[in-house]
Structures are given as C-alpha cells and as structure tokens.
Length: 331
Ligand SMILES: [Mg+2]
Image (cartoon, rainbow, N blue to C red; front, side, top):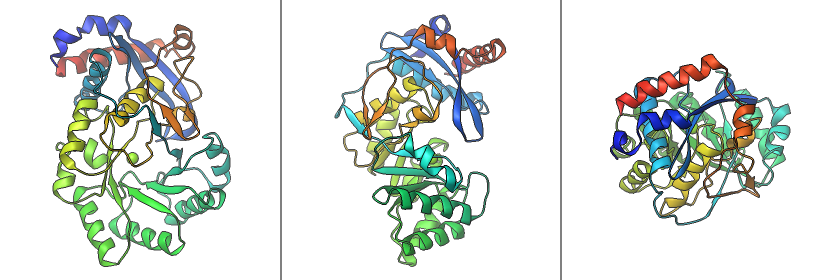
C-alpha cells in the first residue's frame, strides 16, 4: 500500500476527529481513553496508540488504520466472534460488579500484577472469579510482570486449586524468559499454556517468539502489527493458534479487530474484543456490543453527536493532529 497515493494526509486531516472517553475503572493506569478517528472509502477507522508511545510505534498503528479505512478487508470466514470478559486488576469485592456488565461469557481474562502487588492479591481476585463463575475458562494477563519463578509458583498454585486455567498471557517480559518458563513448566509436569502478546506486537521481529519456541498461542492485535493483512501473515507463518485482542478501543477500533478475527482461517479461542463496556460511552449510536458472548463482525458508523459529546479539549486535539502529521511522514 502506497500510503501517500492511497490516503493523502489532507484527506485524513479533513475527516479527523479526536475524542476522549472516560473509563469506568482504571485500566493500564488510565482514567480517560483518547482516540483519533478518520473516514476513508471503506468506512471509519480508529488511530489510538497510547499517548506515551513513540512516533515510530504510533506510525505502525497509523498504517493499520489507513489500511482499514482505505482498503477492502480480506475474505471473512465467520460473521460472529466469541468474546471473553475482561477483569481489570480490581479488588475481590469489585469482581461481581465489573464482570456483571459483560452479560454471558465463557472465558474471563483477568489482569494480574498491575500494581506490583504480591501474588496474594492476584490469587484473591482469581479465586473470587472462580467462586462466582465456576464454569468460566480463566486466562491471566500479566503484561510481563512476573519473574519466571513467580509464574511457575502461580501455575502450581492454580493447578492445585483446580482453577480452570486456559493460558497465561505474557506472564514474563522477555522472549528468553517465556522460553525458559515453558521449559520449567514441562520439567515440573505442569500443563499450562503460554500466550505471547507484547513479545509479538512490541518486538522488531514478531516471529522471534515462534523461532524461540517461547509460546503455545499468539495474541494478535491488528493495530500494533500494522494492520489486518500483516497480522494474518504472521498467524500463517507461525502456524500457532491465535487470539485476537484489542487495545481498549472504541467500537471503530474493535471492528478492525473483529474483521481480523473473522478473517483467520481457524479460530478456537474467545477473543479480547469486548472492551467497549469498559468505556463510559462510544462514538456510534449502534456500537459493537457483545451479546451472549458473541460480537457481530461489521463496520461501525460514527455519529456526529457522539463526536461532539466526547470531543477532546482543543489542546489535546492539537496534540493528536500534530502527532498524525509526524507519524504520517514516517510511513
Ligand atoms: Mg495482553
């Protein structure tokens, strides 16, 4: 895709709208989520790299958004995607309220080690989920926060407690540690699957995880991987099962993830695209909502009235538009 021919900067700036939407619960340390939306011939796209990301990283997200707005999506294999509920690192007393917003679900992804707490806080949260939803599959997302030893000890405890653990997502930070953890788990006879997230989307080579035998499952996010096509290529080359996830996006960003999930040849895991309920509102009057654990695969129309409601303050909008111009030049 030749970006300057396909999507001139003036066109992106012409339809660009910057929103700031509050979060119901602190997530990734954030209370507000900012996003820039623009429209191309295929529909709306969202560009929302987290504000601390470098221009180089944000430019990869921009390529993905431009592809989604300007190029037809690859052929879809399904029109509904199974979705997991997501539990931020809340105290056990808040679990029922937060998960109650998701309606029915078969899988819960629980955030762990978010505040650098000890393992007991994580275990209390996990145990509360199992108590309330004994049939749900549990996946834990540590964002690389454990040491190999901590992840190993946690795995032992979870298996002893018969927690229905689906997988550990990025339990440790580096690819080397992931590989080491997999070896240690096997050596200890612990059957725990490892999913790689940051080690794929933040790595210079997304295939390094695969070459190091560091994961059983890939977490694919369309935006940080540079778009749906690129993510599909990685999945094909890795020949590992994939889970599609989002990065706390509005319905527009989620629809790009839903299209990626729908385009994968095989999809056996629930996907992490149900995060719209963590935001206090959305940019569409028909947002992508999870119903009975399923998400519809479709594009999302944006409403002007919603853009007005959530319009970012002028100095934030200016910041995003300047960022857009800088990142565009990097493409
Ligand atoms: Mg993750």
